[in-house]
Image (cartoon, rainbow, N blue to C red; front, side, top):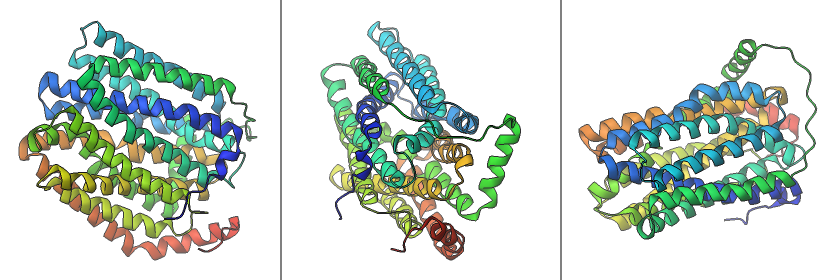
Length: 416
């Protein structure tokens, strides 16, 4: 594997952003694992785990398009800072209730929904904000890959830490640690100095703006096909994380530490995927990669669902993590490369909705289905469906390339 390029780090603002966010993402994953483990410990219900996933992600599906329209108009730096402050308050509230000993299942689900609302606002704005942090499109693909590398480093480290912290301290202390990580985030934002990109003044109303964004995305075959493929992965592959407490306790007879290691294994695979993507110079060739990664994720998920031991499950989860995150980052990179600048926020909001917004339905269905037919059968169905999606995309890859090639040539992207 080629060494990853770090050219986006030459931008001071991007370095500050990356440095602050790594703390926040480690804390975020500590909190995510802790709240899932606590909810399952309190209730013993796989269905409620699905409800938790649904509550935390449904706002993303509903609000991301509106946030995308707003991202094409608002001051991105100030809005990002405001969302970080509100996320700090959410984590602090969860920690306070847990430390007081009054945290109930409905508190966990409600506060997860609050975080989902904040994430729905933040993510489309974050995608558009990257362009300001690196001063143009030249280093944007590398910035996307490095941002994903940071996110998955947090995803690998956070769950492992959560498993240890739950055993040594408690879930409440995990929530408190997450709240403290936002101090570094706020300091980094106070140090960032960005020049907002020029935008054409627009009096377009919300409904008209949303309609324009949907029509633009649907009428361009590459955008439509990539978003639909991402939706399949989000709906049918990502629920493995929702069902992880069930797999750990009922299938592998493990504890919170084992859950942390399994989640970290998938995060480690995702890091390998983003290291590879960071080593690439541009977006050309990513259609072929997406076909491979969706196929790999689906196949590994089927094998994980039927793994006879933890030692076989760990490397399979690494492949699942590699496949899902490499797919999502590759789709992100292609979209950010080919989309018109004045529609970037709206298209990236659809990307957010197609990936994170669809997850609640996958988690909710997977949780209910696992109570009926078991977690192994549920994950097997999801994996086989991803394999089918990869084969369908492979069948239509030539049409996608024909429409993307003129855009790449106009941008001066050399053939790999």
